[in-house]
Amino acid sequence: MEFWRQINDGRGYALEALTPDELAAVRGMITDQYLDGLREAAPGLVNRAEAVGLDQYHTLPIPFDHGSFWEKRRRVLPASAIPAFERMGFFRRIRDRLPSASVYHDDLMWRIVRPGQPSDIGPVHADKWFWDAGNGSIPAGHDRFKIWVGVWTEPGLNGLSVKSYSHTSDKWKHHFEFKHGKMKPVLDESAEALNMELLPLRSGEMVFFHDALLHGGVVNAAQTCRVSIELTVAYKAEEGERLLAAARKTAA
Ligand SMILES: [Fe+2]
Image 1 (cartoon, rainbow, N blue to C red):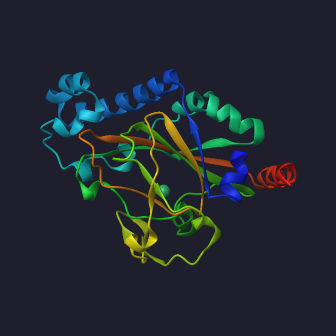
Image 2 (image 1 turned 135 degrees about the vertical axis):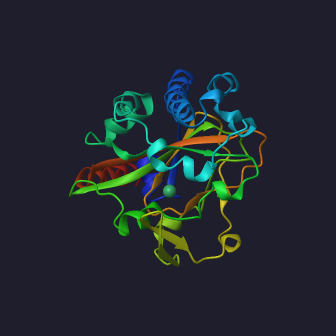
């Protein structure tokens, strides 16, 4: 099934992948920013951090509070990273279908989830809820979808969990709380009852998903840190509608 139909009419997501060279480039961009952060807070650890790699971050004797130090501004890649992503194969395949597609800079953010740390993962949510709460804005007449990229992952032990088809319903109970200067959605459904499915993603594999799809992290059961990066893709709404109509016609 065409990715656009999988996201919109199907289970709410589609799978894609980086090439090995692209994965190496993404790892390099994230590692540079990570080492810059450490240089600021723990300069004595930089050489060791560089030698062991980002997935071994949890083995470093960090002298700061992990959660508060790695705030969003330290994890959003510089705008100069956008053209690098937009030149990659997966993005060229998106632009073949949606010529207006572009990466929204404010959300070009990586995340690190240490082994066995429940506080490193956020609650299940739909990205739409953040936008509904007034966080961020994309140009008028545009829609968006999300891309989650596994940068260092262990299939079955960490990664992204999703609730297939959840984007077709708006019944999911949630409310908003003001936290860290932002309105944040909080799910009021029991996570067990939702029966979330952990996608078995290897490093370099990625998920394109609908703005209204329920998703979340899982406590990392691996021995290594999970690192991921997310991209919000904005595109002209009319282009998305035309593509969906054409894809449905082909499928019919
Ligand atoms: Fe999200």
